[in-house]
Length: 402
Ligand code: ATP
Ligand code: MG
Image 1: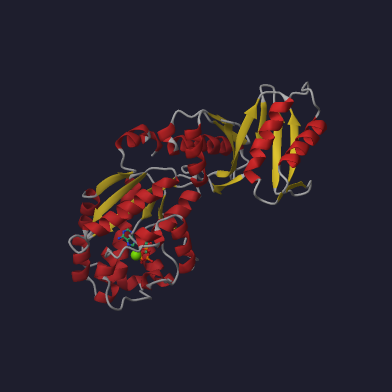
Image 2: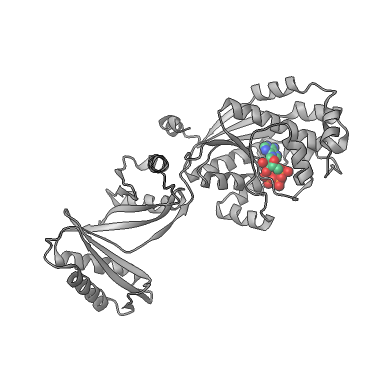
């Protein structure tokens, strides 16, 4: 096999020293985690790039398949190597440029010599390699300014290294480099997308879901588990806290006027989420709310709901159009799961005409006649916790990453 290693260019990285070290260490850990099934991997991290050694073709295929999903990588390139011999490097250059033989593209050769004693100097090597590639592939042509492909040749002390492809990475920051937050995960389209966007900003997720059996079915719960599992493919485990919510929903329905049940329901959800957040030592809560989408997502509603806590509530979709959210959901493969038609605990108890502009003082007044605290405590205490992906050995090996 000609491929020797994969060169990884970092994504958005802080210029500050300590953060940079954290970013790089975190990225290396996340890469190891994502490729747990092909370990061991030799990873060499430098200040400006990282290298993964490739031992065989199977590993190469898996790496190329999954690297584009790992946050914190701007781009990566497969690197081939050969002996320090002019004929060998020419043959390798021809083989690599064969990747593009059916396309009409322009290229240039760029040689760098760390080993100044090599028999040909930079310019001669550049010219000779360009010549042999041109002779082999009729539809390639040389262009020095902004060519489609740059064939990079590095003559190092131990061998000659060659690369020609720059494959885009997922961008963003390594998961975990920006702390941990609790995602309120419904079975809808929006919340998985919100979780994805925060993961892309380096946030590690735990998720919380409210369900109301027997009003909501096993299928609707399974759908949420599937969504949590789908989000793990971006390179991190996710713990899902499932909150039994029936008792509280029934209570709310009894105790507050119908047109404010929705607001109170959301307030109780947020109070529960905030308790779980504190227990798991997460810093913020994430929701899939988007301004104006439904009655609970007007500024007045958000204000009334938000009032129960001073914890930062991150709403990455607040300014997104639904169609744009759907597009991301399709791209990250959560859309098909989200549109499965199972009931959500909120929709079932949603009144016909919820208040779109609830007044906080009134809501607090209605709630003041009931002691919700013990119900909230019970819901938090009786939660079920699942870890995704569910495979046992993986969960154990990486428990320190949560
Ligand atoms: P989604 O598509 O994410 O369900 P939505 O547009 O349907 O959002 P709502 O149902 O009003 O809007 O929910 C707004 C947000 O509240 C959700 O994005 C999610 O973060 C949270 N949420 C709603 N229902 C639940 C639930 N059953 N469990 C956990 N979080 C929920
Ligand atoms: Mg919903």
